Image (cartoon, rainbow, N blue to C red; front, side, top):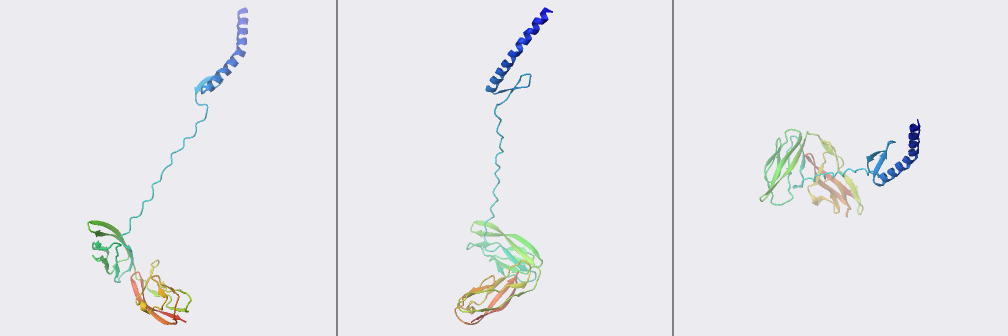
Length: 236
């Protein structure tokens, strides 16, 4: 019995001593970069400062590929089934040799760059055309958009104006295939009043310098379906 009493007194005496010792060890562990976890005082290796989140490396998107360079002035032609094609392929460079090619059913491209024939079926046709300048050759895709026949008519052919005042009008067309731009060509430029012009888009503009009546022949084409008209200008 005396032995048990002495042992209990010894344990009670050590309890207040263990607490400061535990706090001392925890302080040293924190300084050494070690965490003390749990009531049992288990040590777990770790860092005292939280790690910074790892940032994902910036993904570099590939640049969009540049379109191939154009080697001809116009690479898309609008034509109509059954109507003779009268267009020409114009390379940017001089003395370019063109390889004859079949562009669409009924339409051929000759060595001089002329498009010849009558389209037989509607649709979109793209063929590579070989262009050579000496020993250097390139291929240029050329597209033929072939439409069924759709009638059209000019919207306006008469324009009034006054000397010294700007003229602003537009011939335009009604009908024709949807989305096909018409083209306008003055076939006799000498008939235009001085100071007035008619552009390839049908725009009538300029500042007339003299009074009079002028009748100007103009050729209008819509998808290869062409017709000649007379534009009349009354300048007062």
